[in-house]
Length: 131
Image 1 (tube, one colour):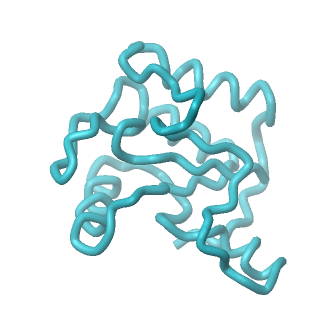
Image 2 (image 1 turned 135 degrees about the vertical axis):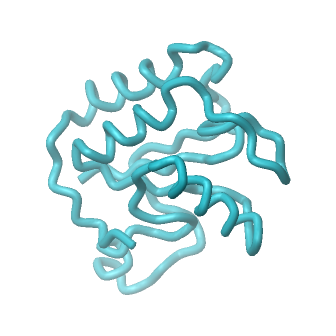
């Protein structure tokens, strides 16, 4: 079961911190398609306390499917008998990475989703202990 850590500000929505910007075209649909294909989706953000709660409420109101937020997959915590501070994932999608995606491209989320599915396939059995 592949694990994908997805940054919130600058990847799912435009970065307007502390406010929540508008979602990038195709973001919600692509994330939900990956989730429905069995990927463990971790929303990974520097938002904390009330800003993290606002983000989670936004994700829920906008029907974004995810397994965890700012925490590791429970199957990994059990496997290694610890929960490290760094989010453990097979794929990291973050606007701060060296190879950050160009979110201004209206097709970027389709490109991301297709690259992931090409590499890792579809129809996984998600066993990450959803919240």
